[in-house]
Image: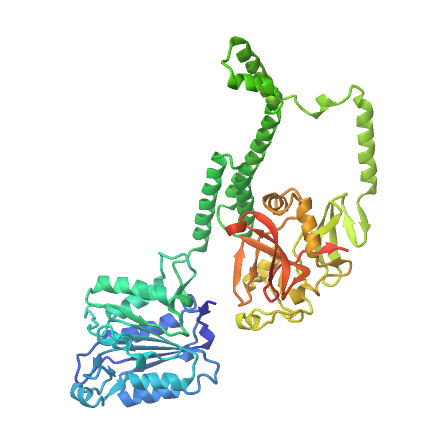
Length: 594
């Protein structure tokens, strides 16, 4: 599960020293501290970490720094803080025993070498982190030899620096100096760190950047600035750098990314069309058209019109192929055998030519329509059909069992519990809702990932949510329910379908597989209009909107329950089929009339 920084539960301590008694002054550190504090409070980067939770400790003695660290962290857990950010900028020092120290304004080199006095020992920082009992701590150190806390001398790892729940990122390795340019506003490492945080990463398509991605980008950019610096990281079992989403990527452009992916899929479908894989091409075009309806991008109308034209071309060409194949099979086998196995003569060539011309005329003849095949006495038939239509018109609209029918196939139903109106469609003898259910009363609404993760695989833990916890998704896709909730949401006269009832639907729509997918998906012939609404995993993550949809069936399988699925990726790409899932995942609901 992805770990995401929660700004409302985060504290930051920024420590820096600009003036020293026994080291060179570093004026740029003051800019480091001020700008880093601004970045942490920027809602577009960290989601508005509160200013009262950002503490700057500047130009203090080692004792004062240690005391303020203790005071600022000792009650943090009780205050609901689960993440601590510690930043240090200044001089770093490693003694002969390999112990690492952070220089403060009163630090003396000789004392650090002999006793470690007059500087802040990293051992003390580590102990403060442990004593705070805060779940996770992220440490940045911009100082000489700072890699000592991540890798030690050479390749020897100092196990004592691996603190539970802590991630550390340093400006250099254990043998390197860290540099600053007197003409620059910031030190090299912090300047690059701030640049990445403020501008984001253009080489990733992700909305949020992980600690590992930040580290790799810093390695590259810092090396470009000064080849003598090699940033290092130390991860813990609790904080996996590639799984901890640290800040918002300001280079992320959702519209541009959507357009890029849509164009890639259009190109894929166009290639399938060229190779006459028409069913596959049509399914992709339909899926993309459906997807574009869900997003707000500049070229909506143009692209939708283009996709509609391509869908129609696929269907027209498919009909032409079917017609040609039908007439091709009417050529007498004897003629075909002669043309293949014997040396052709003028007579056989003439026969084949006439047959081919006849077939072409049959296919393309503009007046070739159903009326050509009517019996001579077609007036009587026309009158009969007209009479039948008139009878149907007199029957509809009508209301029956709570459904307002506009004709034999289509109707609407109003759920009296919340006055929500649903489209209804009749497929063979089954009457289905043509929209996902969106009933949310008297069911726990769970948005928090950890609370969702704590649900059990049973028939009692009820919960619902909207995809990505966004209400606008509910208007499109309906709600996602646990199995227990799905058992309770049907209004009077409707029910959660059984596995067998879903199988009947698939059979009526062409059978399990591609044909049923094509028929059931929005824009398909069944008009049940299934959208690829995604699902919520048992760990709280939302997955696969516009790629997969999954409907609960009432039928259970061991500790799981059956689902009817439509998929566009992997082994079951562009197929409709039955499967089973954990009862605590969030899936959609389509109801069947009793």
